[in-house]
Length: 310
Length: 73
Image 1 (spheres, helix red, strand yellow):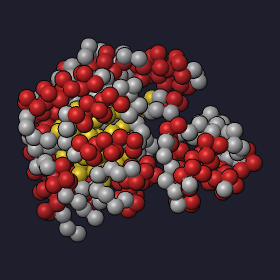
Image 2 (image 1 turned 135 degrees about the vertical axis):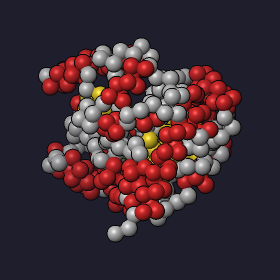
Image 3 (image 1 turned 180 degrees about the horizontal axis):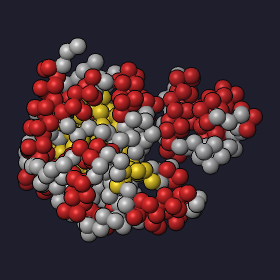
């Protein structure tokens, strides 16, 4: 049941940093990869040119493998895929759809493909489309989410597939990794904890808000549009909830959401911006370097796995 | 084939079979989200032993039927 994710991706630890739009930039990506995990560049806010520039910057900082996340709904998806293949990026993770039509291009470029799947049916689809592994992402995650929890989703995806499964959503320490391993996951994707890494260039207000967050501080907005997003419940999120309660037209919701992530990440407006965060933020309580985070995660995970017996 | 596809769609979306025609819009009439849509496609693929491409372009039940027919060829 368990697969060698480190061997598949040529990394030291089975830890993948979740892609975070506007946030996981070359600074964070190269720090995670350099520390032995898999850094993942977010490109949802980039065009192909911006993407190539970021890839080159990562390569200046590390010679270890890294990944690029491709938002398949992005208007630039076609050109970003082309750029990623030309740059021979070792791994891609994909969100918002199936990478099926690009698989051939990725295979020819030697790029491993790890799609994110929020349900068994979508995970099976990705396997049929030729994915190398699937990231089963529970709704505890920050940002765009599905409906099923990691606890329920991971074992069902593991049973349905013959390719390795990476668990995501609600994991921020070695205990979460060990739990996901027990559910059958071979690797772990972690977002929120890396958001507060010293190398992460997100606005300090954003980091401070994550560090201050309690277990109940996140909510999902946008369910009525079919694209729910998990965020910290701030003024913007409350405004969203109000509009959705009143069945506001989706254009109005779109208008409110436009530029909101940038407002939080770049400008540090954590009340009127979109502060995307996983439910596990309450467990994230200090800034550390990516290397310290990875070492701590793995040591704790190893210790638990060694000492766990009935 | 349409009958069986209708049943699968009705089962996943909680609608009555009679409500579903070739013109029924999957998103607006059936209120199916992407999780529902991929579940329906998965069930249809298993049922007819086919692989359906271009799922992203599906709007109506008729589109689904056409995709199944073309992938059987």
